[in-house]
Image (cartoon, rainbow, N blue to C red):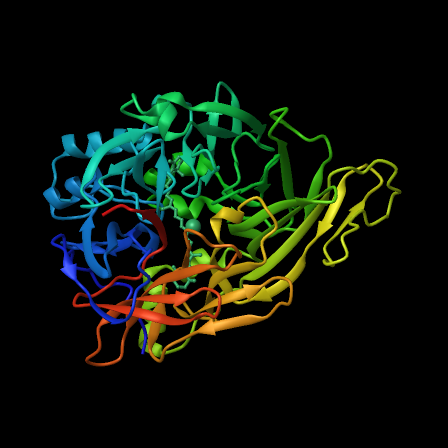
Length: 520
Ligand SMILES: CC1=C(/C=C/C(C)=C/C=C/C(C)=C/C=C/C=C(C)/C=C/C=C(C)/C=C/C2=C(C)CCCC2(C)C)C(C)(C)CCC1
Ligand SMILES: [Fe+2]
């Protein structure tokens, strides 16, 4: 049986009480919000790519041993314009929307102008982020959409460009213990320069008076792009106590091609090119000096979407990522490809993701040319100094076939032992979730027959002592006939089931989730 990626999903804005099997820990109070695409065709139009689908938020609220479920489409300008027109009229990364052929020439000219000086989509269907005290649905364009985290109603549209010149911003910010948020974005050909900018948005306390916390956006550092018109695509970055890690990979947006994409009748995604002949630069930014460290680190060509974690140890900066050899992940999610797979029953041939660990020496003083400067005993990752002083890094592959990594976020920036991930076996659905022990390399799994779990989210026990004191939450699509979908609660230590909350509604395959304690 295969998941039907193309099917439009219904929203359930009224709370639905779930049926609990097992018992929920009393301390688990709050709301898990998850985000992902839910609508793929409208009128006689449809999206080409699964990531393009209209954002459908859903949430599980835990209160006094009960769970309530609700879901709501994000009613952004994109959603409203599409619904009003009864067809897809706003372009997304993988789908260029063209004017209705029945429309008059005047309308066609306006649409053309809009795509020459484009106003991008606010269909924020990738993740939930927090800036100050507010929560936003986000993808990677300059628009984010404030939401009510409890009712999932759509609020104001916020434009990063009002606060800083940013054309693209990740949907994976970092947060520190004080509640500050950190994110990374790209400014394209701004005053003749293309650069990646790291910025900070202060904690809720510092922004409490402001309607939009981004008003207090502070630039930490800008990294120049290696080429003006082909910035790298990236989806996340790493942060430790003293450093940020940004991977400038050879998966590139060709801006000139993008500018003419509409005229040429192709999508923006077709202007995204993997260039394996180029290497991958690893930028390390010192948080104290707010400057890039002088040493130049690089590795072979690769494509990374998700950083797992990063930490400092004995003069090294260690970071873990999920990496691919090419861009086949994006290609796998074209709806036509997914449909063919479903019909033929064949699984996909996309490149298997690998959990890789890199170790960068922070001091290379005295290192000889050709010497491996990594002195950590527990990793085979290497960093060899070359004649020109650059450092060539080779990772250690810790395991394969994993994606959507999460850790106990209290350990972000510190040495972690466990990563929680979905397991993928050459297919577009996850068949299991797993706990991976990076020290022993032991993998513990949860799987259910005909069940497709989502990204596993770790929630720490309030008085927890050990890293894995807590629970894992994952929403599970259950394709066993006559059975309902459910939210699964696992004990993170033993990775065994504690409870299921069965929902009398069809859950959709989503991307990422955010847990807000005590939001109820
Ligand atoms: C502004 C701008 C623009 C636009 C843009 C856009 C429109 C974007 C969007 C974007 C987006 C919208 C993005 C997204 C992303 C996503 C991702 C990257 C994802 C990933 C995923 C994954 C990794 C998966 C996983 C999974 C699942 C989900 C299921 C099961 C199985 C697996 C595990 C495989 C342009 C360029 C034109 C120009 C410049 C500026
Ligand atoms: Fe992501």
